[in-house]
Length: 248
Length: 245
Image (tube, rainbow over all chains, first blue to last red):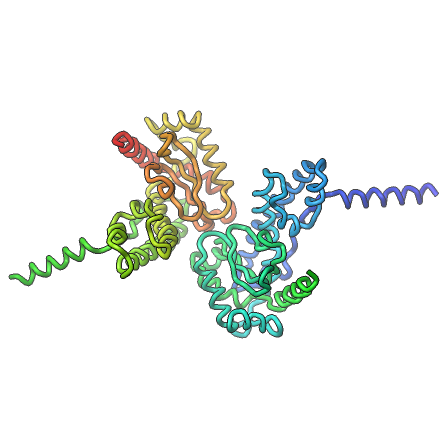
């Protein structure tokens, strides 16, 4: 009888802890071996990008989340926000205590962006042309941009012309429901601007994303990027996005 | 007899009427002079690729601006000025040229300045310091040279994204000031009378080939390669110039 009581109490305590603890981000492992994207992105680059840059965003985000958690316990609204998944917190940055907003935007954004980016890549195809989406996503791209090649051209140009550190995105716009291309600076993500944007595809244009292989030759990085896009995964995001949109 | 004179006149007219054409300044030292702080390979990339690209693109923008039919005389006159002057008048440029000149003209002058402020490394960071009026000015503005170093270092490590950290004589307060700019902005774009003394390039290309993600190591080692005599001369020129205002 005592054993059962102890078990019940322990279970209860664990549940309370789980419910009350803040989000703690774990560094997702790459969904492939470090050398899987060779020769487009070298094993060495992937180790740096994942184990150093992505790890750092994860660590720094966790430090901030932990501090923010203890600081907001007395505020009922904030207390709830800080327990949410990071992608929810990032859509509510303006509600957070001022001293955490910027560092969470940077590091939480960095965490979320890299988690997305690495999951959108796969072993390179031999040529650029053979790697394309199919089905409703292809149709949507053709409808919004005229043709898949036109879309590629626009995405590539935007990526090449982009100045400084940031990202180029393809997403379903929350308001117009069209597919659009846009940029963000630093580690901003489109969802920081509208939580209902549905991200489909992105490219990391920080120099660390390509320098170890391409040095200053960003154009070569972009050209080869088309060989490593995991269109099946992007298609999945598109389908999930459509479903989510129809629920709104 | 007249033909050479005519040619000479035509050449002179062209020279007088052409827009500013930027030349990529050679490094004031060998590519390997900053080893082991900044490797020869890094310096070749940084100078021959990045600085070259800014030079080429800035020139293309200046040429476009000058030859554009819709450019009025005021704009054409501006296009003939030194790049430092053009960059203090960005707001007067048509929108189609403003951003590209800000980015590439800024990149041009920032790198010209930056490379000139570096020299062969000292064995340790602590032995490399300024002397004379600049040293005193730093102590006056920051409390001590070490406090200045701490502030400059912390700002450099904490800057997020691409940009620069600068030490300059503030145009308004006349105090030495530490501030950042994003991308290839330069303090003179914000006030033409700021006197830039020292800058550190914090774009990843400036350190990645040697330090990879370890920006803190780059910044720590940066103190060994600062050419303080050159920075002192910028200070002297700057305070003289200020005196004349």
